[in-house]
Image (tube, rainbow over the protein chains, first blue to last red):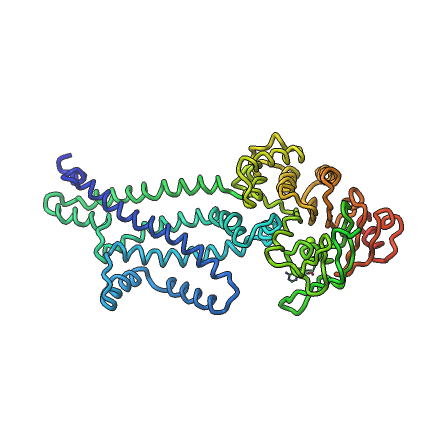
Length: 226
Length: 249
Ligand SMILES: Nc1ncnc2c1ncn2[C@@H]1O[C@H](COP(=O)(O)OP(=O)(O)O)[C@@H](O)[C@H]1O
Ligand SMILES: [Mg+2]
């Protein structure tokens, strides 16, 4: 036991540090997903408007985000904005901005798909019970879209949690970065710590993403529209 | 007496990708207060388009529609919305809110109209009794059969106290037995509340069952109009004959 790498986990506050790193990861993802849902719904509604200008603009935005690797976007926001405009953003804020831009594009496209798949008679029966256009959206269309979006939003959240490992490159100390620090610090005393630390991270990621997909499944079942 | 619905020379043309579609061609007819009026025709004849114009979901390209003597074209958009609350509509698709139970579905239009929660609930329960579904008050739409869902939809549309009820293929998704029970319910509503009912259908049996008068649409034209007995007894036009024959063939 004495020589097993696992003991690094219990040295000092190493495990707590790892959890702290994980929390930063999750926090960035959750904030970004929440914002993405809100902006994504607006973007999706905008994309269904029959106007050539909004169509072109939203299309350009979508393609731009799709083509750009997330890392490039992160550098663009973190270093680009800082250097060019003198705006000082912390790594975490930059990460939230980039992930929101990304999530909004993905959500927007999904919302657009969901919107045009809602049959016309739904809008009409709303109008037929005396709702205004806005009320039809608020009470009938958006709740249905939300129900359809939940599994997709969850999928996006888990993908974001995984992609957040990139934010270490703009100086955010998330779970992987903490792991590297711990491994570095114990390089001579516990040479095989890497396996144990990364193994722990494997489980941390798993236990972060697994409940999320469980919740998704339950919500999906509950909101299932027949 | 002024008929409750008077349609004067209305036409509706859609701009489609491959040119224009004239869905409704110069149609005129009247519906008396308290009638159950049938509009029949094959699929694509223009029935839904015609009835959408009555409900202001669609604006006719030409002609005038008078409801209770008021010309719809002359109403402001606020007056139109108010007018629309006098005209209920049910569809083949029941369009209930899946996340709300039966009572809350019926309360929904009342809440939107600003009725208090308690009062709305009381009214919803009364309406549930009217449609014979009291025991399903707390059920969710997913737990109901097609016929029961349509009953909820009918209760919901009655919540606004409409003067006219439009039914666009309201029984087309239901089996014959259930269709019959829904038609009986519509008849009851017609008698109990004096609501004028317009039944749009491609099923002749439905018209025979509850309508007093009927209009036959064919390719956007109104080809024959009269009492149900006259039409089924001695159809005057070839189109009406075909329609009746084909259905029973
Ligand atoms: N929004 C629309 N745009 C273009 N064509 C339409 C539209 N709505 C209906 N039509 C056309 O009008 C015709 C009549 O349709 P509809 O009124 O739905 O017939 P019915 O209800 O009798 O089956 C059909 O040829 C249909 O394709
Ligand atoms: Mg139709």
